[in-house]
Length: 408
Image 1: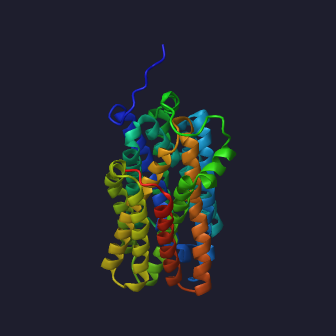
Image 2: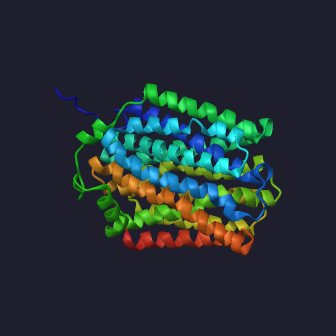
């Protein structure tokens, strides 16, 4: 007799909690790279102050690899299951701490970031796919919110924790200790505690306009261009990475040039991630009740306004405030974009369609790093990248405003 699947967060509270632990650990893994590595690029690896394109290279690699993994992982998880892909992602991450510890050149950091991109594309995607499998249809925004809260709260925690570890043990040793503990625990907990949720997806009610016989290529073309609603969401996902790329690549360098310590910088940047993470507990379910459009458009514009302020202020409090404003904007748009894509995805192809969205979203890292790095290299300073990223965020929000329908 076939087992009846129970849907809902409360009905599957243990597995939802364990999946939240997984995304927290995934967030810690990327968080350890976001402040220390750009901040110490010159001291540890000999990057001069205006080698902006070389500095962006590790984020370009991360964005391309993670984007491809998102696309592949979504499809593979629909075929082979979420748990296997999650475990594979953790296995790929195991060499990263040792590579950081032993790295003789910047190329090793790029190689470690290559593995980090695979890890993030496989593991983060699986945590949200699994929770969406278990949740009811009216809980999609809430599920995205709590997932991204756990992940980006971890990014904030890791930023501060690694800054203190680097102060105590040095850059290589601090990152090695932190990374090894997190990755081994993530792998072990995935193997022993996580259940496969694909049966929930396969037994769920199939809604939407897609059929199960479409190829990955057909779905990619349809979601990326032919369906204008999905196009508007995918372009917004790509452009919002201009904000995150600025925070990851250029903000540590900008603040170091202003004379701030690594710990001061970690607090400012962690304010961005912490506000982003925490508020998603509100904005995720809020999008279920008031609709997605206003939160997406408003969030894109807030991020743009926060970016505009940075080059024209010279105060730690104001920088922290601007980072927090950007965090509010990201909290409004980030879980809402994923939930909006899920609104148009049938259960049996949700992993693939969300994978296509995540492909474009994380490909935005590479696009942003190349464009912003080129602009910084050309202008020989960092004001122009801030202005360009702000303008693109606001313009992308206007595209959503024009194309995306008002749902509620």
